[in-house]
Length: 222
Length: 222
DNA sequence: AGCGAATTGTCAGGATTCGGTCAGGAGCGT
DNA sequence: ACGCTCCTGACCGAATCCTGACAATTCGCT
Figure (cartoon, rainbow over the protein chains, first blue to last red):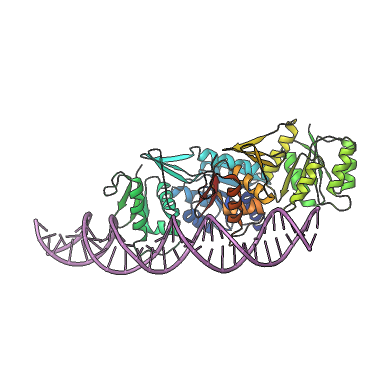
């Protein structure tokens, strides 16, 4: 369930990477150019981005800069052609976490992917208040006692949690949890939020963690 | 320097393996058919042989048998196509030390290569609850009593077990156990899970180890 | 402060989706 | 042909989800 976004215009290379990453158990998405890559990074929030520097139009540098400018902090692994030493420096300064020089060994790349993901998520259990989230088992507990969350509830919780306290708009929630791109007219989100509060808050009527931000959405305070 | 002999008629695959093994620091030789493979094994005495079963003319089984008949005792790692379960058994009976099913992950293969080269004969029996798994003999027992598992059931059990309690998505199970990577519309996985529960759980209706994770897949709690 | 519109909270039904179960049949090795 | 394994589709119950009506709250405005 670890999601990887590959931003690579060379279809063959992208295909090979995708295959091997999928065999390793990752969920892979491919974007063929910088603009689409940026868009997918925003919408899908992958756990890792593999980013080619040489892209038509919007190149890797700009994509990376844009990502960081938007506080999208997932690790980024840069693919760069050999002999572009200055590129490496530039990339790392811009906030890339690692780079691999083409042509690269698949093994080397996969190893680095693992390292990056592990480094970035050393804590297996996230937590806020007395609530713990274990992403590997998809289990949530409160004060040590397991809490049963329905799939949508769990996804919703993660969507809020991953924003690290920032507000998540209704539209974003719709996209990330429900996969829609439209605004919402029903009470769907609210209902699920209410259910989360019922299960995770001491006093669901006066929530201390899952907070409403009027006219915008919700945010999760740790 | 550790020397590895690859007996593989698919040039692309052989090339990829060679590259990655060389990156790992092994000295690699490739033979494109069984006869040449046998000849090279005799002459070069590699420390490990990676042997494809599907070879033109002299197939992998014969090569393996010939090797053993000549008391060439180096570890042999079998490459076999998916769905040829009996191949594995036959291969192991003939003295192969391990096998990898195509399509395989590079990491997995390299890991097994390492294990084979490093070990003498470490007999590993994994276990959870009162269930024991002996990978060398493919035997599973429960409370000491042997349990007969069909090949797919065994593979499924391993796929779950190897994730160490983490959730394994249906997609991933499809890939690891069934070798194909499309969305699941049938009840194949569920049926096999049910069979596993019937054979390994005290109360199959309320499983304590093989747990369902709705909308995602299954996980095995130890 | 009081009012009204907009927004969110709450709730319960009904619809939908999902997993468990089963039996039939195909495929394959013996 | 027989038996074992595997796949599949149908069926069912249960979990889950959505929805719309209504209540409560917030906030801008007078």
